[in-house]
Image (cartoon, rainbow, N blue to C red; front, side, top):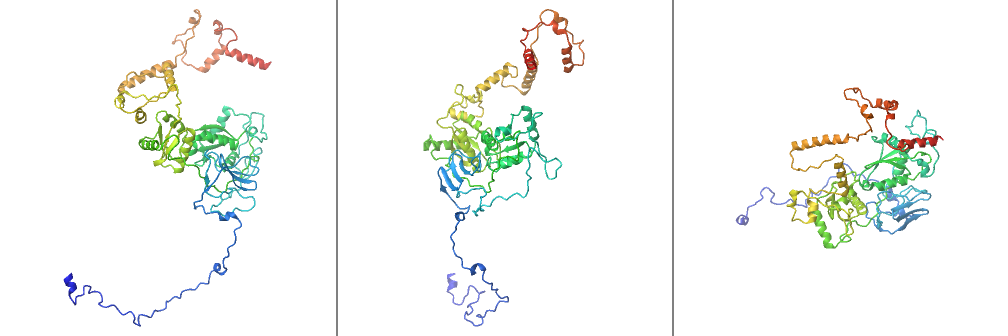
Length: 552
């Protein structure tokens, strides 16, 4: 290439022009006008009047947008007030006081942590409708009003059945024959007399497989659910509440809040489903009416659940526990929108055998399993170590005491695993061995009672084939049925009872319990029997005496 470049008349790029065209030629300077003229718009009206910065009279217009990071530290007490309408921070978190309200309003009554908030994420404002002027825009739109016009009627005098535009309405009650509803103001007066067992069954049975219910989710029992439950009570005596997710960890707290805030009574509870009775003397017209929350307030800032150095541990011990927790198997796996009623009990039982316990939460929102960890910290109690990998790692703490002081839980290992696990530490055996059997005093007493009553049997031989095991089961079924249907015999004195004995061949083929009832009433053979005890000692005699006293 150096030789070619040194040649005088050689052009490597022969396809390109040897010399560029002149730039200052007169023919190239002419530019034709565009065929369509560029439109000239009149200046906008916004620019005609110069903008003058006026002072904003309302401080709510200076509020930041909801996507901005706002943080303001707060302390216990009143943080904002407008006359008698105040916003305060106390033991129940952020609450709102309105004039004439029976209690302090909150966004959630059941899912408020016991720890006091340390800051707020937005300026304090009332989420209710203002009394005088519309609330200024702060980036959150209010809830839309319902277009339905719900008729207001009296529960004591409901509309007739055939009236148009009115659904079925249940009358107050239930009442015994001859009694009628009474106007009540207090909770005891509205509930009336305690319900009997058959009345509870009568009220709950129609709602067992009905989808008309109040769904209670991760926010728990919110303020607007008060009006929702009263709208259910408007037409039905019982409101069905189905709880799922975080609130089911502490169902006792949910039930307590439901009864306390609504004034009803829980008559049945199965898992996460609660049946709330409105009361015998409930009247929809005289129900307590609360204002609705038009905006959802931002959750306040609470102290961190996970500390780098938890209480009772050093930094090295905490790091060691977190490393061990990564290899630890979880005791259970929580599904999304599940019912976690037995979670607290499972964690307490697991702490009996291991100082560390892990709960797997795949697919749950980070806020959900953090709320679950906060509840476990208060209810178990325990020390939270980490939320890594969607798992809750807990330590039982220094002050932990076993619930079985006299008979602590001990793992019983099978003979095949004793030799393998002899060299392992005790903690590793209790955690990693899958063949451990937990034996508590209550379970041992139940097994002994079952063996004594011939409802269970102890197998001395463990290595049985399926055929031999089936023979043992069939043999045990025969003996257990014989023991279950065997009763103590009544031995009669003398030979008079032997004369009444009838062989099986002489007995009639048709046997009926109803015939025996009538035969017992008409038979005269009772005179031949001697009394078992002194006269007037039988339970029937006591009943007869009470009836005679009532007749007198």
